[in-house]
Length: 298
Length: 170
Image (cartoon, rainbow over all chains, first blue to last red; front, side, top):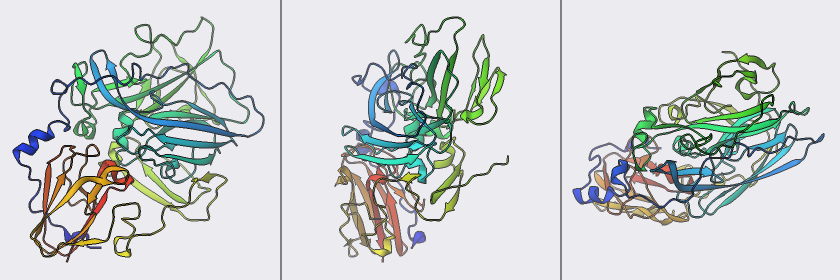
């Protein structure tokens, strides 16, 4: 086809009145935006919201339903952002299945949304990890099915054309595929997700932050967050990770990115065991101080 | 590094740096094209393939999921034409109108935002031009088309919903 047919001549021409009008939805600093009403008081996922360990000896079909949301919430007090999410939490719900299971994945795009969404699960063998099969416009629902053929903890994320914008806004999570023999028993399991947010403001600048494509291209985030809000999980936020001395805790950690990797270290402790990059099947690494968590992995 | 893979199902396997901004905006991508029979036990897309061509062959299926495509509007006798951005189509304010339009060489095309459907942009499929992404009624973006040929374009946020168009210069 005539790809060379178009030649740039006029470029972008916009009259001043149009520019003034455009100021309403063109990305701009927080102090230029009106403060919107919060759609939700909490976008941070509860780290104890982990599906129970699987004690089945045979495969089954696991049905998972998720709804995508576009909601205004606080990054920290006084700082708002229009998040995108699976089921209104960051990271999105943790999925748990077993090698040999079929996972029936249903994605609904809430009818109040303005953008298409879908899901690419790294536990899927198939085109785009299911992205094309689950592409939904606002108000639509789609279902596809895949077989879990390998064990590990895997990222899932929205994968529409502006996927880095959608992931940066919160659309990622993790799916655990247990090996047939299961995982060793522990006293606690926690689920956390890291990602970075690129906005028109500075960290802590009060007001409503718009997304900043230029900052994302430069890979210079405004916030790097765990569970979607600044200091969301802990004594100064939601103090939901509590254990007793002598108890064991397994942390499922997903790095959504879209661009930064994490160097995950427990200050004042050490990782007794690490499954490198979330894969299950190799020997575990023991007594690890800091483990890399590449974006798009665990 | 050394790594191996295999695929029990057909389709594209895209090799990327999962620092995803480097993929979509900076070019880090390579593709393995896996050919073979479908294997629905491992992957069942849940619906019939969407690659059933409905639009004319000259657009290579570009308009297959564009519900406001209604043939190529003939505007070859005008020096300047306007295309609406955010017209009612594809389930909301997610259309270009007219979706496909024929013009003569030297014609200036003005895209004018309706203010419907959120923020939109206008991006050439071949990368030859891209507008700002804005959402407000009255915003405009202009291009002059001097050479004959077909230029496909789309709105990045809503491309998958069918917000696509084409300018045919003849």
